[in-house]
View (spheres, rainbow, N blue to C red):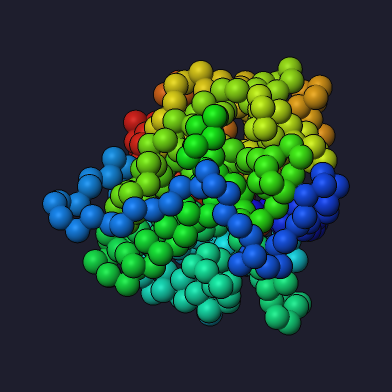
Length: 394
């Protein structure tokens, strides 16, 4: 879940601080401070008892371990953004940390085969973000606050990333404790934030509190960047009772229905009360969250090439070295993301859609940028090595 702070480098729109205000405007109560008081909607999936008999279900996704190797980009990332205690620092947003960042850091550590770094990152998250009354992580920790967690709401994308990273770590290093932790988190966000009975198909509530039909007049609200497609191909390893394939289908379907305005791009926050439309009270922007949608599509190898077409069109022009934030109402850029790591997304999208060779320098992550573009560049590199080695120039 994005932070709302803006810094000298591009910040990112986020929900939780905004959710409290907007939920009130829409007539629904915001209860981010008391997650235990939130009643789970009746359409939320409830996990069955895990089956002990028979062989384990095979996950269709590709294993992550070792894909990155001892890459210099990872070594630089570890030195610049991960403290000795294991806190992943968002350098463009007041040096905060969040469950998303801890999850990304854990994934990168598994991909690099760096178990000591993984254990530090997971240990910090466990000690500082797992402060709720359930198995989920609080979404944000601020270094200038005591306590560091001021909002007890979760962020479902962060929970997904952490559970996925723990699953990959358990597979890579044979550690039962990682598998147990992954299952606990996956079952918990599955029970509280996955809605399998919605007319639009399986939905992901962005958090336990603030986005449901009960809390917003235009709810439920979704954010398509929370459909972490490659994670859903692997989480059946630890939580086989959930229909993860339904999330793959619904994410692609919702994307096809969320082509708004002349640019045919999704907004950050989408109402699915009826036909998908931009959510009330949020800027109708294709922005910092949504740029991850084609990354996850390409990484998982799901959908069709035409599902990537709006992103490829947007990023394929003369300005392809910088990514625009777009007002979907008129299709015009309102801001540009100029740090070099962002351009890795456009390169990966072109590769996935049309086998376009990745440019020289794609495998080199530059040091002079912030946490978010650096993270996206490394993730795009992992996706390319896992799914599209033919696009890489060796």
